[in-house]
Image (cartoon, rainbow, N blue to C red; front, side, top):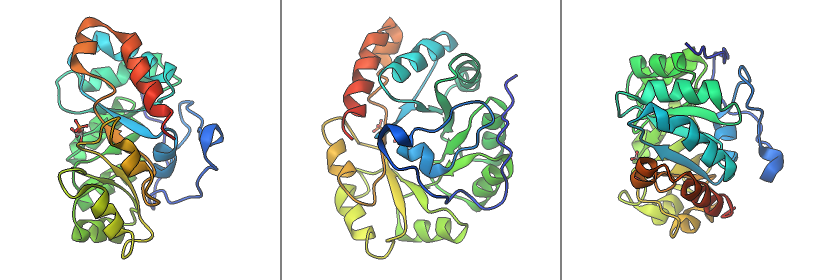
Length: 239
Ligand code: 3PG
């Protein structure tokens, strides 16, 4: 079993940001704690990954790292997800594994036990926020409305996932939010592609985007790791 060593507790992460580019890259050694902003700043994209086979986890993670993408969101949507996180945490120290689709306190606990170092949720509840805080997991809470942003902010979270980004208003929504929510940074996810990622990344309140396009199901099925590296490289070059 891989143990999550990030033991930081208390208020969620709002610390100073690294300066950007390669200098922004953070230590990936086990035990180094990460802020949500560091998770967002490491690359222009956080890949949203769905894995059905543990054997795919390590070569896929290595392929993404080879393309310059290290913050990996493995979604809790398959029975194999936790074992995949464990494998990546154990065998790919250059990557930072996180858990996506975290909806409950139990999800957060299981993800931390599997070695996840950050969490992403499709929506926000205070229970999930508190659980991640207690576990030392950086959380990117999902929001789609102003009220949800205010609830997350009330609990101290100011780096948020905008989900589902394209369906819920896209870049225009983010521009509208930049007024009242001038102190919030977003990771838009949902409907983002290599083709439209720049529309989001060019906005001052967007730090990175999230998306599933870097890890296509057919590339996993055929073991086409070179294609995954290529997709990661193309995306990493967007910044
Ligand atoms: C998700 O949680 O499924 C993500 O938002 C990915 O969405 P995408 O498949 O549109 O990138």
